[in-house]
Image (cartoon, rainbow, N blue to C red; front, side, top):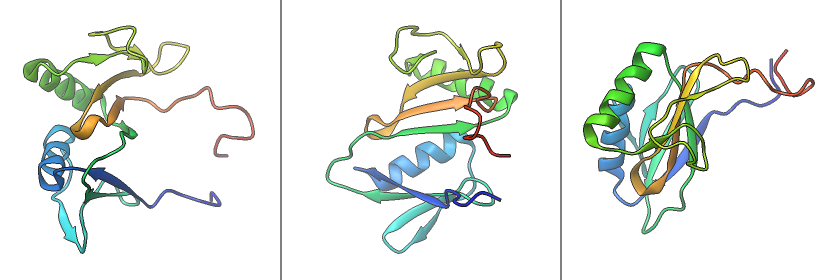
Length: 136
């Protein structure tokens, strides 16, 4: 078991409800709930995103591991909405889908969500984690 695991993350947004609805719709997430100051979404059995209203939001990078069919639905939605995406974080490959791993396995794409957050959807975990850093 790891010595630390991510439990939740606070995502600052200028319109909390609109941002949560956007994430839930695009990523096909569970029903959101209000938790005091936050509007929250349980991603899986361990990780929660807590959306907090803020006068301004410094963009974060969030990466979501999703299935192949789900990836196709996300890409189709971005295409339908006219939301630009790219195969790489710096944006040098606009409109393309990238590979997750050096062997070509997995697909990924990057796009901007509410408040400019840089979002990534990928279909495989990264395999090029240095020895000693990877989970055993």
